[in-house]
Length: 252
Picture 1 (cartoon, one colour):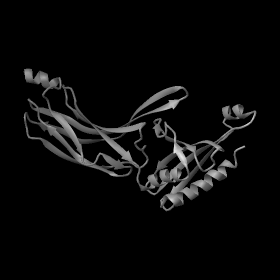
Picture 2: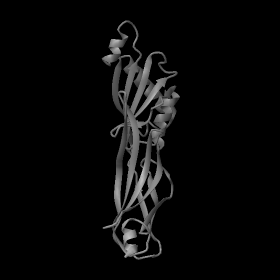
Picture 3: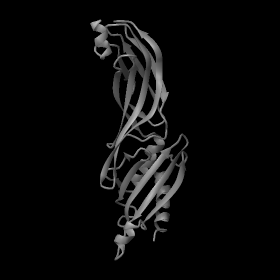
Picture 4: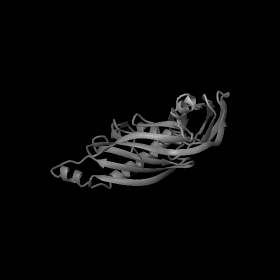
């Protein structure tokens, strides 16, 4: 009876451990590993074993710092699994593909897997594992091209507000002294990247403050780059430079 009470409190009950083959996976890549379940001091029936990929980030809204905790994807590994007391460890292989259109890991945006044992009338057992989501070739090509044009990341670049991940840059070469900053938002797909640039011109003169407050010095442009246009950072940089310069000229 005492063992049942302890197991119900999550002490000496069934345990779970998710071992990932590689804790650094690119967007659109495959996550693989094994879920290990070990028995406790009594027989237990696990109603469900689930795994959730969660993202944590923080972003600035005005003068306020807001925090994001969001479930990106989840799935059920097994259900109605009977685990005998002190039974040998059960191994369940896992393999699934990550979405392409998810934020990448940055100092401001981090990921974890949460593996959960749903055990009726007992405290659920959990396992937390950190994972890094890195750019694939096409996304890395875009980021490298931005750097090749001389844009330097700002401190908060890579923050995610729950809908969009924002990359902020200041110019050190292209349009230096003319642009205040460049904001980049993108959504990766298997064969392309959808991109939105916010080009912020450096306001000057007597009405600079009013122009800045009214966002008259900004211009948003949406476009798409195919995987062929993302073949090399030099090629992508040439395309971006033309777009940025053309749109800059349209700002008053």
